[in-house]
Length: 274
Image 1 (cartoon, rainbow, N blue to C red):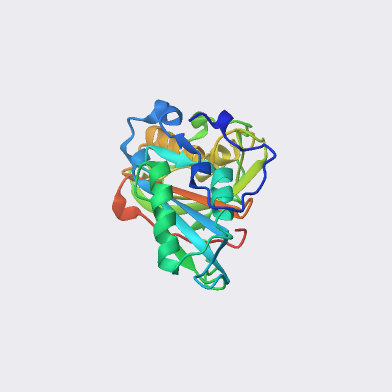
Image 2 (image 1 turned 90 degrees about the vertical axis):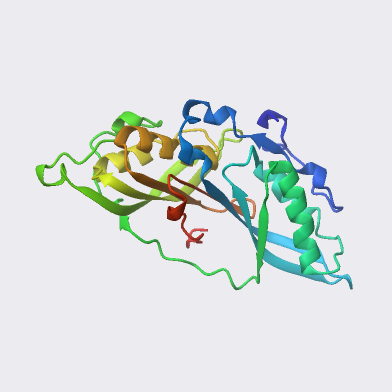
């Protein structure tokens, strides 16, 4: 379905009765047209943290938890975020016999919307630990060319003589990823991790490329897939992982990850800004 038909950016009433039909799927296919041939686009996961989960137990007593939803990158659809928020809010006054019954119901509803198997893990509200980013932070680099919309031509290899003949494996990260919601225009902030094996990239060029998203309109998943596709096609690494941990909005954060090799799938993390 077209995102223009969704509730995103519109005034809505928060439901107080269970409404699975409020979930709004969005096809991934159109956004992937320019890089559908890249196999790694379909490998990976979208991890969502849901911080506003509540339901009633069999005695009518409210329960709360933090959820981690796991949506495969191979799913035909992603799920629009506001509809997901409203869906979980619709369960606030619904009784379930057990936590397991709640999880089963949610997984069935989300899997139907995504047209793929979706999993939900629940955490006690104090149990989702804050992680420290691992790798080399490139935010102290000084790019020579700054633009305001994604430009793959900014990417380049390190041209120093001592690195030209060598392959490296490195994980880089930057806290400077910013883009805009394509419907509301609100800014999205994130930390992006790039694990890379191949000819050494120019770190300044990668930072310039990440900064070029600052006025780009795109959903989180689409931005990560474009970053993956551009690095894969321009720098031609042997292996690649791109993983972005976006900050929370409306009680949700979205964390897409794409990999060329499934052995490079990281474990999901939660950073301090989330």
